[in-house]
Length: 217
Image 1 (cartoon, rainbow, N blue to C red):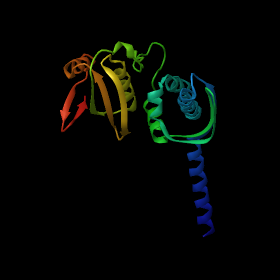
Image 2: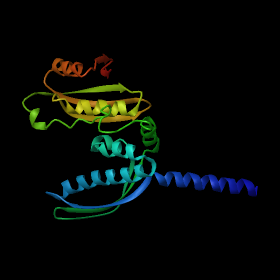
Image 3: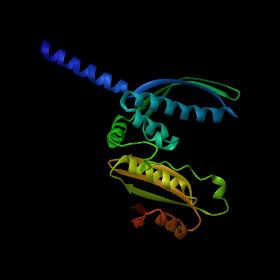
Image 4: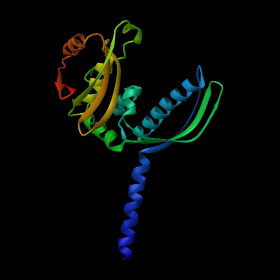
């Protein structure tokens, strides 16, 4: 009985240490045009600070370069839970203490996929394309569709997401769920559906309709 209790205690301690490795507390204080913008930016900075702090414990230098290159939208997929311990706001400033938990399975999967990759300046297999400015999309009607995308590796989805966000026809992309090699997203596009489809085809994608939603291949 004593041996069982000792073993159970060791298991619990190991589990606790493992859980803590993917959780951290961060402090953010900043100033913006107004308090609402400051609060939004503080949360983004808190996500990035926590994500990179935890990633640094697990990643190689090459992998850290890759983690640092993720944009705010891509990085947000790795956030499992956020708690606000305290917050203070005055005028156009905002200050808060956050506790942030990272999705350990998603982060480990991402690091495993890129364990052997060479992320030197000559390797362009993993590239994030900057978003097209919104002012290039004005003057057309908006349409929204639900799209499912299946991926073998997490970086396939992240590359696809970056490519979609860079299309002039894509005004907004929101992720509804990400698990088991499948992601569901809502895409708001401008212009006609045919022009949107053609833009996808030019990037090597095919959009197929399936029972009220679309599958991106």
